[in-house]
Amino acid sequence: MLHRTSPWYLHFAQNAALIIISLFFLPLSTFILFSSYGLAFFFPQDGLRRRRRVRASRTFVPQTILITGVGMTKGLVLARLFYEAGHDVIGADFEPNGVQACGRYSRSLRKFYRLPKPTAEDGSAYYINALLRVVKQDRVDLWVSCSGVASAIEDGQAKEVLERRSSCQAIQFDVATTSMLHEKDTFTQETERLGLPVPETYNVTSRDAVHKLLNQSPKRKSYIMKSVGMDDAVRGDMTLLPRRTVSETYNHVSQIPISNEKPWVLQQFIKGKEYCTHALVVHGKVKVFVACPSAELLMHYEALPSGSALSRAMLAFTKEFVARSAQSMTGHLSFDFLVDEDADEKGAKLMLKTIECNPRAHTAVVLFSGQAQEVSKGYLSLLASNTVNGNGHSPKSEEEPIVVPDQPAKYYWVGHDLINLVFLPLLQLVQGDTPLKDWVRGCSEFMAHVLFWKDGTFEVWDPLPWWWLYHVYWPGQFLLAILQKRWWSRINVSTTKMFLC
Image 1: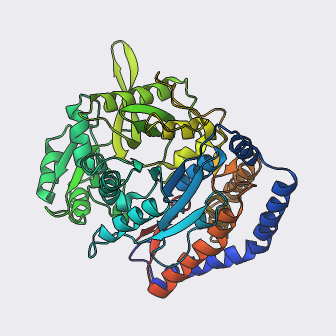
Image 2 (image 1 turned 180 degrees about the horizontal axis):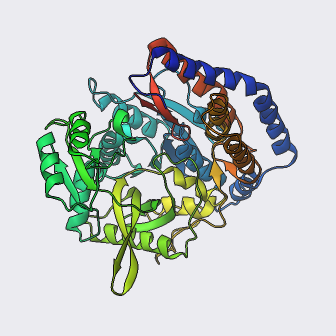
Image 3 (image 1 turned 120 degrees about the horizontal axis):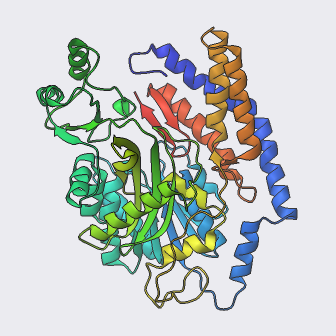
């Protein structure tokens, strides 16, 4: 993995090689694109049949749904689910570099709007006003916010404005709740206040404070540093503190850009498996929920069985967090958990501790593909009682069961796996850094994903976003990276995020 001190020509070669790989596979991808169109024409897919069946009902009244963030997998998946459920879907997203988002070409969208991205100089006014114009112009009934981490607070501001100045309702937390959940320090403090388990966590604004805490801690404990704000350059740093020697510890801490203006948290490291969740919360009730194994850069999704002890424990935590909160919450709520193992005279026991919260939709929503009616019904429960739900009927007064994945597929992204399981190991093999058996194992894993898993972006009835993502969007971003000398260390294909050096 390249970093900020890597020579410029390596960054150049990295981007150029990825563009060449995209061009090499362009004929194959184009063949798959047109084959999918032909297959969908002669053999209509389940999603299209569901939509036609629902739209043919005389009692069904479609709602107009605005989904922001359709360039990311999570936004695109939700757009397709609402479309399959029979509703009219409008998509919107940022396209700050001029490279068009793949989601704008989805068959599920009636319209697409490019939104101005909030900036430190211009603030959020242009963004909020653009959203308000779309809502009023297209008579939007429900706004489902699927935007990324960079606009979290602005989305909270937009929710308050839209609901005050239009009849549109929003699946989005308000500013105060979003800010509290978004920041690592305030979320940890709120979780502790609610009496729920979190790892030992300290707010630090100086290197001296870090060293003081490390010196006072028991020797068997380890800690990691996390930036309170968003900093791509250090996001993947999982260095354990204290280091093996005092000098190594001081050397590492001295490189951390920590100050009152850039606070960090020192959090206890828990050596356990990591999990993540995605939940839809409406008026303080969990409507949709899924849990799955996680990773620092999660690109493979496999749902935990909804009846498993871990899944039920994470659902219970989510429901308890929402129930104990001071106000009725509405929005997407995603937690990251670590399983801590503790031993006493009675034996070993597992304890679930939440380490982070993301107050926005999670890519794990892809695990609900094929459940359009159930998922859309959960979202539409926000609307007034005289509004029809996803089945075209008035909502029932009794509490509906929580929607969980029903026999979900396993998901991957072919572009990510092609590079990480095939081409990078091949390069390491040529350089003599990895044995042949590791490359063969990677190729086998890649083929297993292609044959038995499902690509998170691809749908037979809607293949163009998949084609566009790999042969227009990402090559365009790589070309701009070369021209602008905007070097990066990693990318997340599903969220279209570049982690800049």
